Length: 195
Ligand code: SAH
Ligand code: MG
Image (cartoon, rainbow, N blue to C red; front, side, top):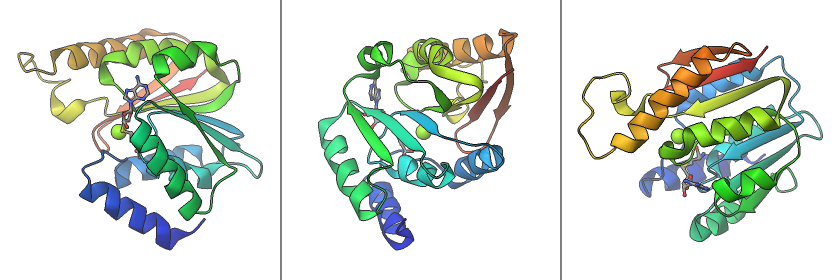
């Protein structure tokens, strides 16, 4: 991995207001995966490839990442960035809407990172539960959505997203097969370990 390029990619993404993973969120994920063998990781929401490039460091020797993105321009930028960071071969971009792509997948994953349309998180969770390996871990980023999710104010325009994120938290908390933690890191991170 070319760290100098990674830093440039990060700066460019921030300048373009692309909502890339925050440093503290990344640190928590790194810490959580430190003793885990990650052969297959699935990401929902590639954007310009920043988080996928970071996650490539957490993979086992022959580990691979599949990452889904529906915005063609971002897919193209991600492909360029993956080459710049010298991690091509580790990251495979699946271009299209995750709502359509996920049901076609049959691979099993050690880790799934949900970081796309907030109104679809419960759909993504059901697919993630189907695709996760025993002892796998499902992360969901932006789960507290700027504090909206835990406040009782629900009259803003992001109502559907907030409702879905609350439902996601309810489902992961009540599912007896999951051991869940909700952290305030970044914009909120849910960590669900499969028991
Ligand atoms: N994981 C990235 C940031 C992702 S931002 C990082 O941390 O570097 C969220 C991305 O999800 C956006 O690029 C958006 O286009 C994409 N997205 C949103 N809903 C989607 C969907 N239903 N299918 C595929 N991609 C989606
Ligand atoms: Mg995010």
